[in-house]
Amino acid sequence: MTTPSQINGKAPRYPAPELKDVPEDIRTKILEVQEKAGFVPQVFFAFARRPAEWRAFFAYHDALMVPESVGRESNLTKGDREMIVTATSAANHCLYCVVAHGAILRIHEKKPLVADQVAVNYRKADISGRQRAMLDFAMKVCLHSDEIEEADFAPLHAHGFNDEDIWDIAAITAFFGLSNRMASFSNMMPNPEFYLMGRVPRQK
Image (cartoon, rainbow, N blue to C red; front, side, top):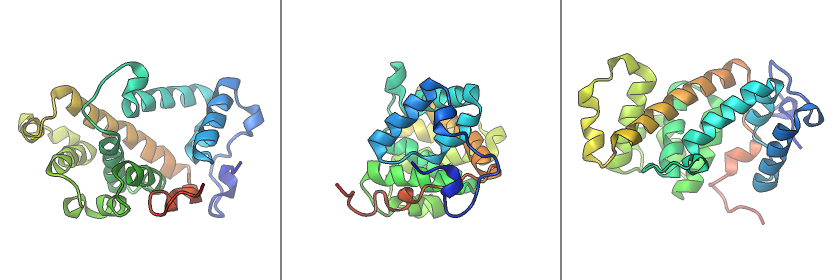
């Protein structure tokens, strides 16, 4: 299992605990992720140094990104959610989140180029008008949330988003604003596996 100290030759500013030293519930989740993905994203190790924060972080993450896990429905697709994270993380200059969530975006959208396009300039990306309206709103929340006004909701309603969907867009943007800053200040580096995910066929 790759640990944060082994990523890209750069050590994190805050060493992660050994897997054997983390609480059982967290260790179980990390092992489940490894079994499913074949590796463990570094964020799982990074937050494990503070178990209470790990639990709070991933509980909120799952409530937003996997709403069915808390019995909630949403009109945002998995690709929509990852697109919001990728675009706003790029605006926040977060290397870890752009690379990690860009990889997941490529997989959900089945478009090898979309994450790069969205991260660099979503207005030029191969996305739908609905997704562009979604990202226009997300980027305003990311960069100028104090300027959000009633007129900003109209384009989203025109594309079929309801007010709960718009809450999701804002909440995902805000949550990953926290994640972006934690990843950047702590020198969290993307796992090498992320760079090729969704670009080339997965090895069996």
